[in-house]
Amino acid sequence: MTRWHLTCDRCDASVWTGARGEAFDAWCEACQRPAGVASRADAVCPGCGAPLTLGAPRFEELYGELQQLEAVLGAWAGDAAPLARLLPERPVFLTDLDPPEPAPGDPPVLAGALERLAAGEFTAARAGLESAPERVAASAR
Figure 1: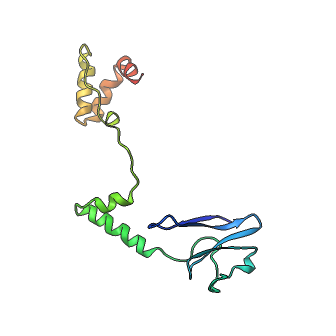
Figure 2: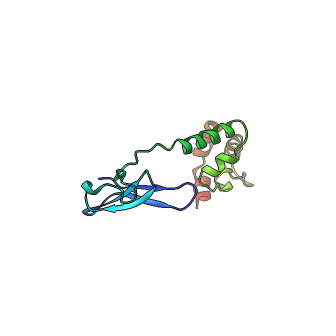
Figure 3: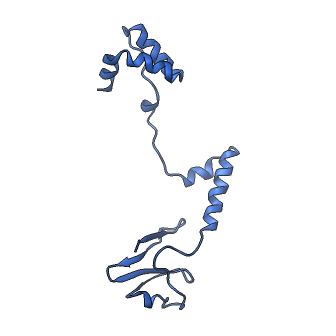
């Protein structure tokens, strides 16, 4: 049986559901409480008597899905702030994005290839870079 990890988007509350050895970790979707049970036959919430979830949740996260849709539509319309709160931070290193400047003494083919690379002419730049492997290999070190 697969184990599921359920977490709250607003607070740090979380719970696991699924088999844990011979017993089960469970979740009551009615009263929103975790429970541990010895067998599938005991899968009834001790608090409210509702059936416990032992695996995949039965609920649909419509509110969360609506928040995501609203954030995407807002970003599309020019307001990216709500979407930025939903997406994880991903660092961007400018050195990974910016091609190197041509160095003094570079062969004209290589200097031209680096200028094409900076201009976004990737197919043309590739031909020049492939014809000057010694400079490319040296800059990778």
